[in-house]
Amino acid sequence: MNSTAVDTLEWDAGTVDARILLIEDDHETADEVVKDLTDRGYAVTHIDGGKRGLNSARGETFNLLIVDRMLPELDGLSVIEALRKENIQIPVLVLSALGEVDERVRGLKAGGDDYLTKPFALTELRRGSGRCCGARPTAVKPCCASARWNST
Image (cartoon, rainbow, N blue to C red):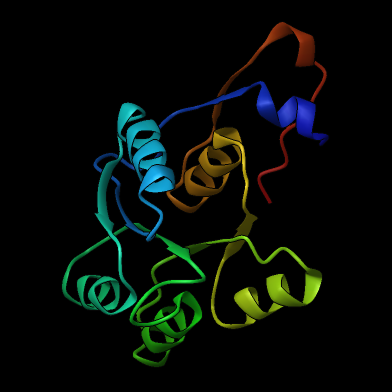
């Protein structure tokens, strides 16, 4: 599916009462993400450091983690690797300005389930977070009526 079609899909919030932990040190990015996902029915907790984010992921129940790669205290890949070593299998969407193929592969090998390169469109974030929380497209605008969504 091309990016034009993805941009026109409308998403529901997926799992009822889905809780998302956003670990992001850029407050402008975090504010936009929190507002957008909250407006769509998700309960979002924002933490701006790796160590505190790791502790929160260990101690609370979340349906999804959205983790920046470059964080103070502890980098995002170390957060993900620590959780996976403890057999905590919360889905993880990695955010990063590091968009080279090798960097994306590192993020996925560390245990990320999806990887989104900054800057990103909020529609891309919705798709990634929606898929991880069980959401499905609820509508396709007429210009994309022929687009098919592959949920696999």
